[in-house]
Amino acid sequence: MVTQVSERSERMPGGVKAALVGVWIQAVFNLLGAFFLMMLVNDRLDHNQEVEQLGLVRFSTYSALCAAIALVVSGIFAWKRFGWVRITVVAVEGVIVLFSLINFFVAGMPTAVVGMIIAVLIAKTMLGAPGREWFNR
Image 1 (cartoon, rainbow, N blue to C red):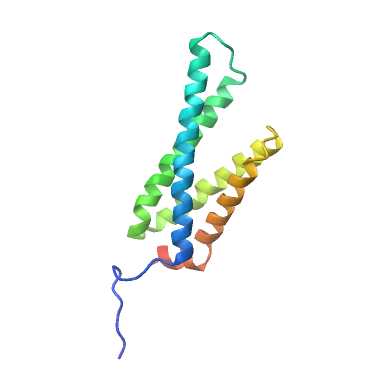
Image 2: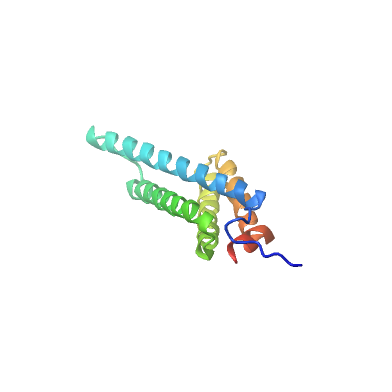
């Protein structure tokens, strides 16, 4: 006798859960980093101090905010198993890897490697079999 498992009782794979924890952590750190950077820039501008490459700093800040918002929305809807969540997370992780590479090679920030490794691991999980099976119901 074949029993059919309902969608609600199916458990999320452990790798996908771990990736979603990483998504939430990235979202929080992107939000905190963007707000901190915004505060620093605004404080310098309020005191008539120069900000080098202000346009690039603002672009980076708003990019971090957009990434954080996309990750939060994806994290919320991942439990509903929408297919677009997987695509969104992979796209945001790709952008994070790109920015990490720029930060590492151009700005000389060795800590960017940590963000890049986390992003690659999350993207690998989402592109792998557990991520595909979970989001392609």
